[in-house]
Image (cartoon, rainbow, N blue to C red; front, side, top):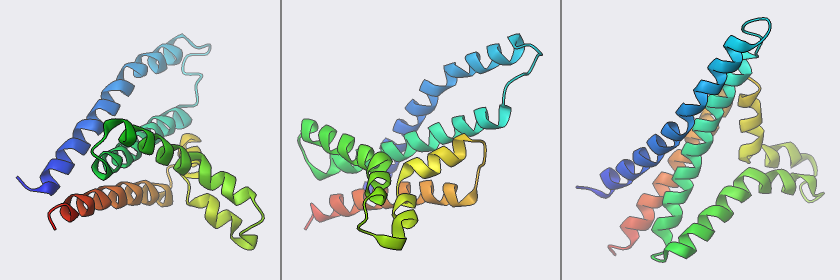
Amino acid sequence: ITDFQIVLGKYLAAVSLVVFAILPTLLYFYSVYELGLPRGNIDVGATWGSYIGLVLLGASYAAIGIFSSAVTPNQIVAFILGMFLCFFFYVGFDQLSNLSLFGGLDSFVQSLGIQVHYDSISRGVVDTRDLVYFGSIIAVFLGLTLVVLDSRKW
């Protein structure tokens, strides 16, 4: 078994846990859809966009968490590092863009964070830029995990 197979298996297990945690909430969507007056009085696009965004957000957080667990052998340190990185990617870039350090690059710095892309998808607008962003975050952190694991063999 290669490192890639181990990392991919761990990642897919984490993402399936996220999906199984979100699945029961579909019952709420169905209830509101059926019981609303008039029937179906719910923004279906925004709701499905939010579900897609939640799965992508959870998938990104899983990749960040796997990277954090590969960096250190201590589980507590890995948890704290993972929480910090997830928090920074969600809120940090948005807050950095509010500082006057970057001049005209404020919107670029803000677009590096997860929050802008998650908010866009949760409005029901599934843009390819957002999908590419989440895919890139996942690929970068899984790739960094493989680099960390390979560096232990040196």
